Amino acid sequence: MRGAGMKIKIAGVTFGYSDTSVLQDLWVDLDGPQLVSILGPNGVGKSTLVGCICKILEPKGGAVLLDGTDVRDIGLKALSKEMGYVPVSSSDSFPMNVVDAVLMGRHPYSKWKTEDEDLEKVYDALVRLDIEDLAMRQFNELSAGQHQKVVLARGLVQEPKVLLLDEPTSNLDIRHQIEVTKLLKELSREKGMLIIMISHDINIAVTYSDNVLLMYNGGIFAAGRPWDVITEENIRTVYGVDCKIVDFKGNPHVILDDTVELSTDEQWEQPYTSEDHPALAMQDKG
Image 1 (cartoon, rainbow, N blue to C red):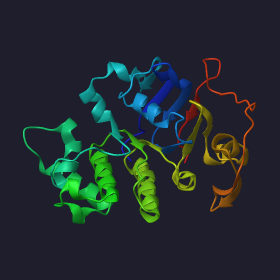
Image 2 (image 1 turned 120 degrees about the vertical axis):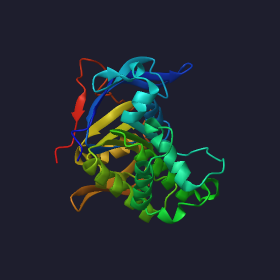
Image 3 (image 1 turned 135 degrees about the vertical axis):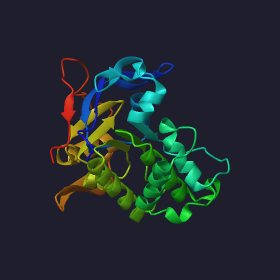
């Protein structure tokens, strides 16, 4: 492990597009090294939150602090050495081989020429993701799943202290979803990284995550250890489905039931909406 990782403080972050509010006064502290999963249905602001953290989007209110410094005050090259971002999909379509595509992740450290160390890190990432056989394949000719793994490898060779991933397993089959999520958990330990990923597979996410953020209606509905967050009541409210929560190898496992109609009068209070409600400190205890 290479140190204690970095700390992200989401301090009263609010964001909206035009007149549409997306995020509403979010407060939470995240300490590395650990794997944190952001869960919640479509349209609740998961990708928007990640965009605010990595400076792709600028909050309308509040701030994102990286080890106490507002990310808006950190230059892009300096930030890229501390924080990496892997989007849900990449629009890259120009021809280049996989090695060169992954090598782009070394840009923050680039010199006049590619160093042997850079190529070693690229090869290590390809091996870790079991795609070394794709090294000389053309990036724009890969399947969706292969493409996703190459983009993830690019994020890994960047060697950030914080790695943000928007649905990193979205194009993978179930076996590779498990392998990649397990790998992310291992990397958080080995490299001392704070890894934050958006996921739609609750059961895989909670199996390997140290902590979970459950989002709903533009806010953080619940946050903490999987057993504290993944409850029958929380799943019913946030996803609109009945379920049973069972213990599977020490982790909560969701078994879905019938879809339920929620009352339009049902009210929900966001627990982390102002300075009167201190941010929840989430860090690995293990």
